[in-house]
Image 1: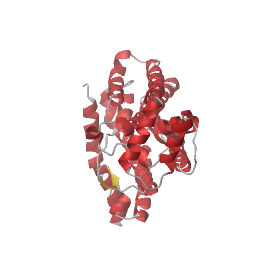
Image 2: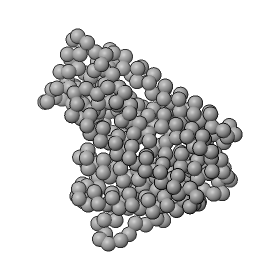
Image 3: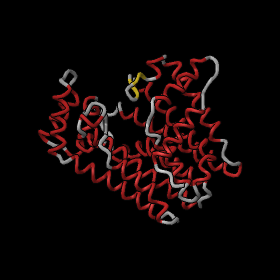
Length: 327
């Protein structure tokens, strides 16, 4: 058996469909089924399965599905709560949980989802339980710290490049790193190999976020799936904006600050103007260089894994496809 990435995704979706979340009062559980029904790439649990098959045969995948699903539940728990904090109206083109129900229900339902994630996670073998829970708790704490930093940055006039990279490492990359580390732990990989898996996911995760920052400005609207320039419109402190604020001077800096402080503006005019400033400052190339540094570091960790090279191909191909995405 040599499953494709699509096979893993289908397996994860089928398992989620078979894992019903029911109870009373129903409005506590219905939002869990709702947000999981909205789809998603299932990237993180797929990484857990792929990391496992680096060291073990695919016959054991069914046994590790519960902890892999726990990763997806935790991810969606963070999305449910993040949407409340961000006042987001839509998630994957559908009303967010707090819009479909209300904020109180979304908070409590998210809490239950976190508990259900633990219920799935503790199904790992007893001899691995402490290691898995310690790694998961460390990851979950970092995700919360990253989200708090992200909200904190909204109230700051300037954010350093180092602080931004720390924030996205915690908020986004830590969970990807844990997803891969989890597969290694469950496959009895050595501590060194588990550490390399985490480093691979962490560096690739940071690169993915920088890629998202770039796509928000430079993607083709027809392929992007959401408004190009959305980060510019709300003055979101992405890597591009941080770099532009630091490197601009003179009239260019004045023009950038004009658009950042303007309260009443035409959205497309602002996007065009700030994008033009980025172009003059070569921000796209600077961001791509930083992004590629992290991708290179990630693949270096993958290369250092002590496992047959051929077993790495699926994970490497999957990652390269995500790197080259246009949306």
